[in-house]
Image 1 (tube, rainbow, N blue to C red):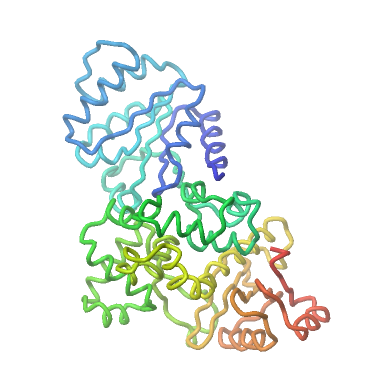
Image 2: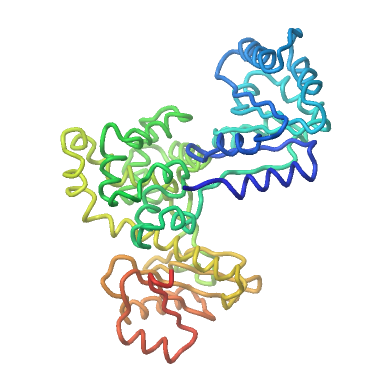
Length: 446
């Protein structure tokens, strides 16, 4: 099981050190926000309110009713200030007030913000939200010049190490496959059964109409975005390999300006990101940036399911998997294996076993070649990495391709890490034995 242990500890520390402040907690679907807040409230003097998407008048009535029921009071609560007056009196010192999905209130009524600003020095107040796009695009406008929020906790997706820990019965290869499909969304991972084979999980959870992820992408996009015809068209085009603005323009027929606006909205929702080549001296040989679907499950859906949606409804899940997913999955997972290898280097760095103290890490995107991993310290000492997930063997020629890409990028490396999910040829093994700056990392090491 995946949990929010780190974030719970952070909230507990904040509360212990200063129980009179305002904390923003937010994350996307499946981030376990509610479980985190419930755990934090355990054995504390806390009041939790989940906002509704209703009129301001109905919202205030509902909050007032919840307060009256919780504290068995008949006080008249005609404003948010009345509500907080009552909460302050009932919760007393060390009290906690949590307003979940608070955007439903403040979108239509600014008096809540004014009230919280008044009480922030008297209570520990948590504002929580699952609306990434609203937090990224609109929150600052709502707050205005008020320095209201003291601490922000974003519930990011968990890393690959957490996936490995969640599935101790799985091999590393199987864990990479799960990570490549579900990403690090805790709720998805917690619903995946390691007692079942990988294919059976995909069929039961994603391809079966009764599966919990069958209609999840429509739920993700439809929860905050309108004009889904445009978003679906753009995402399907990116999944086909149209990763530059001009390619999207030629494929979709939408104007560049329109595509840019919708891409910006998708980026605010953590669905799409612009991947910029790691900055080195070889700018003439580098791509200027490409668009990628950054949400792993949305990416999987638009690669494998969306193009064959008609067949999904007439085929048995196992037949669909064998026809449209099985043979292409290894190539698809290459990108996620690179992410796993980046995390490996970051972990090496944390324990002081990397040859440079990593300050930044990324990928160099060349016009004719790619360096999967480039990491540098604060004075631009570098390590590089190349990752093989699919090929039966990491060959010496693969290493030579990396060297050529390094020349194009005008980058030297203190250490070259070669990662392989399969094996290394004998020449590379011999080279690594002779040269300590060339490090081979296989699945056992990962």
